[in-house]
Length: 501
Image (cartoon, rainbow, N blue to C red; front, top):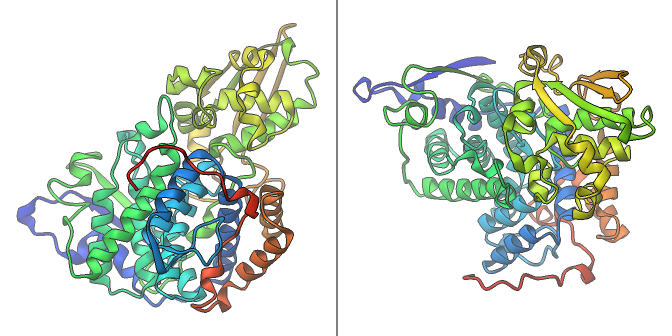
């Protein structure tokens, strides 16, 4: 690995292309690196994971809307849409939109946390859609996905967006563009321009994850993927981009991020070094913001020790800066304490999440979010007793540069009405690679079966799981079948809203 120093340069310095971050990204996206076999296995796991959560969200409103928009753009040699027959094809950028929304809707796929946040699995829908439309094979797809993960993970390590209230999809646009460059075997110049265009058009505010969180939280990464596909198409036609997009005098760093005096250090593999960043990422066992995963596991454990939650006086969760300020009381969001808040808001409230998991001793991607569940009197009372505070020790663990030492948990102090206290802590989620029950292939398959039960047939389940595990051998003809069709009786639900498309 190498560290790329990124800072603003005045226009008169005429910074060489080869010294720009976008070019360094293009170099690794266009190199001839060998494929790491463990990384390939994880690509397969994450395609299974994406399909699981996409199918589970098939008839949720945002997913229906995105799918109907995509269906208005049919294409004979296009890409497939999750849930529909592979014979139905649409333009790849619209498949990326529909599938990206379905994958993101439940907040239930993989994550990587460092200087910023990310869901690297958001790369897959756009790269898969283009692979299907362009007749690529399984190895091409693997290379594209590995590059997408590599770029996003390392941008997340080096450049913090959230401190400037910029949404994390600003790292997704460039990573998808780079992944598409690898997939299509584009030259470095084309990828360089594509990365810059993709970043330029995917910078947006973090209000999508603040206050009254709406369905845009699911649409945002899908939109970034769609915009990246279009950016790559333009650059393949010879068009250019705002440049240098990171280091320029009026660039993203200069006027959106930390300004002309800031230096960022972005790690990237050397040219022709295997891309393995996907192995540093981790999926979710529970359908909630990643920083709640370990605390859900702790709440389930504590449930066994507390017979009646009404005996609790208060609960304090000591945790990292990010957890406290993003999903904790440090966010100062009244909506995070509101029983009538949207599902999108509730899955970003650790106070709500911990209350439900402690009371139920379990977590469910649908049942734990119903209005009836959120408004249960005992839950609301418990919920209001929970607060978070930052502990420098947990913040340090969160940012540890060694992936093996990173922690995303916290310490929970429960004070009972009789004055007694229960205090326990957890470092990482049970499903984390360093957790009690790390997710491996079998767990990904079990998650797929659980989330798709009653939505797809057993025959379709077996077909998909077989073809995805044969990913290395897939040719251009059967890559289109890397899709899951839901039961016919579930395919009829449609939006009744007046629209343009």
